[in-house]
Image 1 (cartoon, helix red, strand yellow):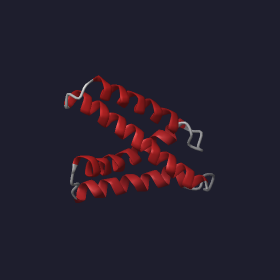
Image 2 (spheres, helix red, strand yellow):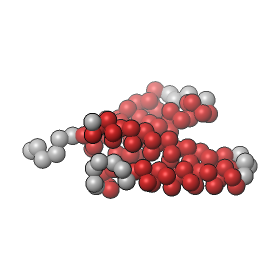
Image 3 (cartoon, helix red, strand yellow):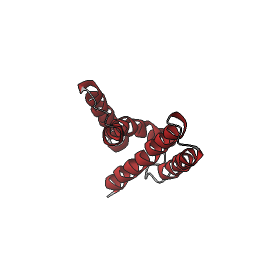
Image 4 (cartoon, one colour):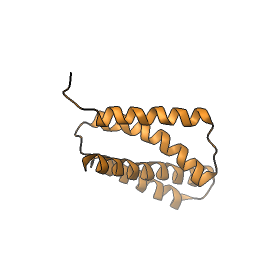
Length: 112
């Protein structure tokens, strides 16, 4: 159950961080205004809270692993929200990142 909980937290964190950054981008780059920017800042703050809920207590490990989730999630967000079409190198890179996430987060510890 811990791995499932961790994966769900990574997914929620990705939506909050990527969505927050996208809202700020829309507010500034697309001239949608301060409300969009403010919602983005709130979302980014909530991302920071969600990251603390991971079962592992090591900040560096959580943020390093989340980096891989962010890479894959950003490509997925771009596809769904902005119509971005990743090429095979984008997909391959995202898969490599997700393998890294699995190794960092879920490899058995204390085994030599």
